[in-house]
Image (cartoon, rainbow, N blue to C red; front, top):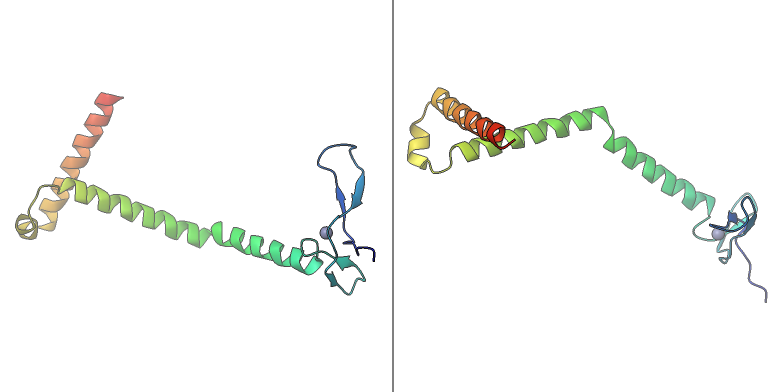
Length: 121
Ligand SMILES: [Zn+2]
């Protein structure tokens, strides 16, 4: 019995430009268009993959999501800066500091880092 091939016509990756040939895979599903399709070229599977990709893209480039991620990155950078600035400071001392004193420590640390960067570069 002859293999029932997929209805999709595909193009060679190389070779004669513009010439297509039937997909070599076996057809596994018949759709309402009357076509027999392999799992790769089944129009429903193609649409499903395209929609999934679009949803992924929309989620990735959603302005609200991007802003949220930017804020999270900024917060993480600030937290890392605070941790680095307070390195070596005991919990006891940290707890005794006022918010203003803590800010001053972080600013001094940042200034020192910037000076070091300027000296390196
Ligand atoms: Zn196919």
